[in-house]
Image (cartoon, rainbow, N blue to C red; front, side):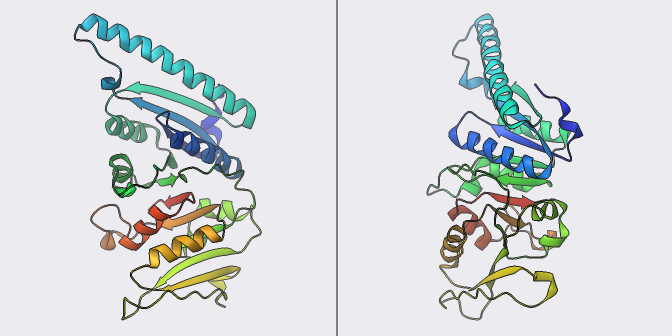
Length: 280
């Protein structure tokens, strides 16, 4: 196990639950780590209720210990394999307990720059309303990388970077600056233009504006309408983005749930591109 995670510029905390989406999240974290000089910690929390099936206390303790040993063995093998192949520092931690409580305690203790989580497949229920995702977006002030639900990106090298609604993050956020150094492709800005009528059809303008703040940026501007989240997500997919960057709203404008306006939430739900929610 490589333990020089602390020597890296950034620290990524990948939340694993042994589902396909969480392993996809790990792959995306590895690809991101290679670009921005990041170390990775994998953290796995397992509720005791998934393991314990006995009323006898001695049997319970024995079962938990066996599961702890087995889980650590699996995690050690995963870490050693990924670390050796990718040549990046990775460590892991495993514990039993309430998932949200243990994750919050671990984040408070380790202070990662970015928490990486998998995206569940789209269901009728909005995934941003999922307990863990919603909790992190409410309470974690650092960056959050929401992985695409089933795509393993080959690399973020020379990937097309996109921004949702606010291009200012292009120059404001250090991690975006680091990502910029590794791409020669124009940035993509997907902007929803407010209009007096909400029934207008979406309009797309691909000609970049001339202001210096958005040099080398292609703008897709959509008229505000009932279906613009569908339109935006389709163009995000069409442009084959490697990463979509989203900035939280200011405290005064925060929505009641997660600090992202409704249109942004809907767009993120409907795209399979990895989304980086940037720190406040």
